[in-house]
Length: 254
Length: 70
Image 1 (tube, chains in turn blue, red):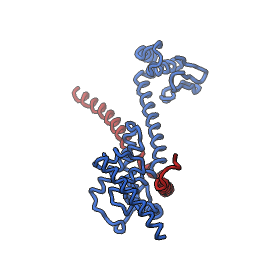
Image 2: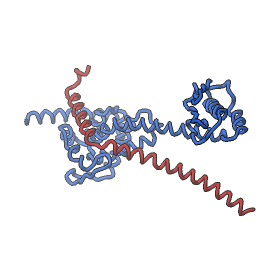
Image 3: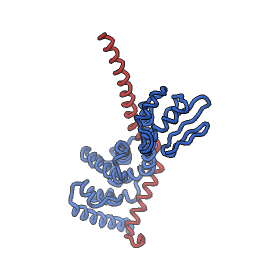
Image 4: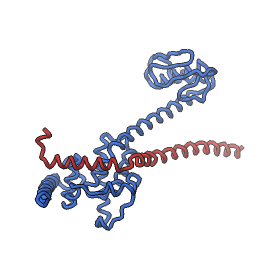
């Protein structure tokens, strides 16, 4: 452990926090409201190092606590609370930054996945948003967020389909959501060639094909749909055969 | 390797890529992200504030009870 001190800066080679001299007193980067003497600031920096566990040959936190108490001005408890708050804030910022990057990159893929499964565009945007909020809540526990979101969104979609009666899309009035403003609905909601063909497949074949296109394994699909992997393979084969036939038919008609 | 893929798989990839790009342009990603961050972090911040307030109130009411006893 080394704490380097200049006239206006105190840094450690072990921890990232530091102390600065503002002309009248020393201020800690994580507790700037305390005006400290040089000795107090040095003790607190040593406490930070000791609490980080990286200097077994240094003073123990309790020993530093006793010296701080004798000096007055700041207690070891305040130092620990300040460091904890700072660590929590840093950790939160890291999580937010990671999640934000993931959200920006991945959201269109998740909405596309749900649309391919047969969700209306606005429903797909809503389900994707719900799923991503759930993902942020459990962010620390999720190791592969994209796979997690696909699985969770697919379960949400199946639940939605099971609870809502099928309504012809022409009878539905799509309203905007946070993710998909009403103004953008028209442009985004237009069907592409694949969507028109998928709409002609039986729901199970369509789901198996859509999940496969977005990287689901047969095992994952079987578990989500509560069917055997054999049934998944059979449906996938039929879906691909039907899709090829529909493409051929469209080509002949053109 | 990818050149040996079934043409239908290549077509499916192209179609999906097209849809993803269309959605990337049409979705209000920043508004959605703000909502997601606020939905999760605001209740946590409120809970922390409530807890802090509770601690302060708890200490105050402790003192009040102690004063009453005296």
